[in-house]
Length: 153
Image (cartoon, rainbow, N blue to C red; front, side, top):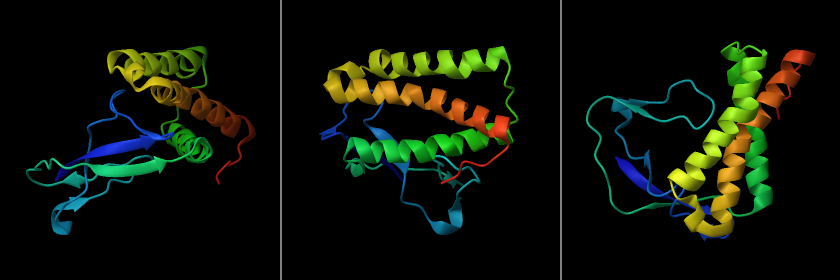
């Protein structure tokens, strides 16, 4: 079943910015579902029809900014490793995409299109750092490629 997830961020439940309802599959028959081999925020793949539940799942992933930054550091490293698997080029156009276009696009999408501004300061911070994720991940990717060392946890 898809369950609407209610995300708690910096002392507030986010209602906008694409964060509620944040539908995730959480109730499945184990013989009908599996996880693909992705590393960041993987979704369950289900064979067959998936229903919807109404009552939300409360998600306290970031009760503090420090915890959010710790998680963000881990997720950006995993994203950088995904960029290595995809063999993303380090050319000017990739730099433009990951360092400017995707951060700006993500921020505007979450803050304006999905009305994250209605969540106040928390909505602004969430949109800003969601966009910044691409920048940090690409910088880590560049560092890994330049030094050929793994910056895992």
